[in-house]
Length: 607
Image (cartoon, rainbow, N blue to C red; front, side, top):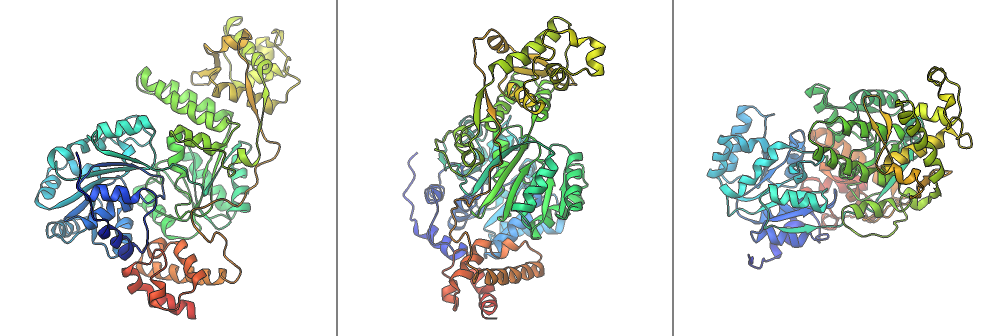
C-alpha cells in the first residue's frame, strides 16, 4: 500500500514546541512520518533511543487520541506525569484506580480532551473497554514492549496475544509496535502474532556506545560488587540483578551494611512494598535497587549509571534488555556481570528439568549457549552482542576484552583429562559425580568420598596436579559452555555429550579462554551526549541546578527527571542563559517547561 506524502512541518514543530528539541535522531523522522500518514510500523530501537517520541508525536499530530498499550501498570502514573509536565493531555486506565478516577478519564477520552491514553493489555479483554474505545476517536494504537508477545521471549505476556484483534476491530487505525530487544526471528514472530505482517519494519542500531560491558570471573561476587560501587559508582543510582528472592534480600542487606543505600525488589514482597521501593528508586538520587528480573521493564529513569548482574542471565535478549536500563541519558555507564562455573551448572540443570516439550528445552538451550558464548568470547563483547542481533560491528575499545584482551590456550589435553575422568566414573564404576569431586580426582586428593568409593585407584587419579584448582574449574566451566560436557539430575552431576567423543579421540582441538591477569580498568567512554566532563567552574552551577530540581520534584511529588534530565541541566550550566529566549534554545526545554520553570532557573543561576 502506498501512503500519501506527509507534511513534516507539524511533526518537527511539535518536537520543538512540546519536547524542546530542534532535530530528530536516527530514523525517528521516517517512523513518525510513516505513522502520521496512516501506516503500520514495527520499531526496534535501543533503550534511550527515543522510541516513545515515535508514537507520542504522531498522536499529537493526528486527530483523535493515541492509545498506548503497555504492561507497566506501576509506571503509568509516572509516564502520565512526565507528559503532563510537557503540556500533553495524558491519562491512563488500569486496576489501581477507583471507579471515580476511571470515570473521569473515560469522560475526558470521549470528550476529546486527551492526547494519549495508556492501557494495560488485559484491559483490552474487557468488553466495556472495547465499547469505550468504539465511542471515541482513536488516532493510533501503540504497542509498547512488543517483545512480550514472543512465546519464548524473556518477558512473555499471554495478554499480548489478544492484541492481534486491534486491526480486526479498528482496521483504519494505524498501529506501531515498539521494542528494544528482538532478533530477526523474534521480530518475525512479533509481526505474525500482532497481525503486523504488512507493517514496515524500522531497525535502528542496537549499539549503546556509552555503556561499558564488563564480565568478570566470580570470586566472592558480593565483595566484587561492593568494590565496583565504591571505586567507580559512589553515590550513583543503579540496579543489581539476582536470580533468587533470597539472594536479592541478602545482597541488599549486605550493601546497606557496607554504607550503600540499597532496597530489594522481587515478586515475594507485598504489592505495597514493591510499589514503595520502585517509587523510591525513581524519585530518590543515588539509590541502588537489588532485584529479580521482575523489576525494571520500562523503567524510564535516565540517570541509572550501572546495571550489575550477580547471576548469569538466561538469554542475550534478557541481558541486553536489562543492561539497557543504564545510561538512557547517553552519559557513561557500566554493565557489569559476575559469572562462574556454578552459573553454568545451574542454568543447564534448570533447562533439563524445565516444563515443556523437547523443542522448548532446545530453544532454552540455544538462548543459553549464545549467552555463554558472550561470556567466554576472546573478541570484543560489543561486537559479539551486536552480531547476535544481526548487526555488524568492529572492536569498540570500550569493553573489558578490548581494554584488557584475554588470551586463549590449547586446552585439548586438559579437556581430555576432565572428559576421561567423567567417562571412567560412568562407564567403569556406573557412577556420576559433580564438579568438586571430579576436580578432587584430578588433583589426587585423598578425601573421605574418594576413599569411600576407592577413586584413588582410577587411572586418572592425580593426572591434573600441574593445574591449580581455580583453573580446573574454569576448564570445566568452558567445557560446559561449549557443549562438551553437560549436567543432569538435581545434584548437577557431570555427563558426557555426543561432542565429547571427538575430543577424546583427538579429532577436535579445544581452545580455552585464559582469564586476564588483571581486571579491565574503567576508561572514559564514548557517548552520544556532549559535555561528558564539566569544568571546575561549571560543576557548582550544575549541582545548584540539581538541588533546585530535587526540591521542585519533591514539592510536586514526581521523579526529578520529570522536571529536567541531567543532560539539560548540564547544558544550562555550561551555556548560562540570561533570558527566557536563550533558555528556550536549550535541548529539553519546551514551551510548557519554559513557562513553568524558566524564571526559577534564571533566578537560580543568578543567585
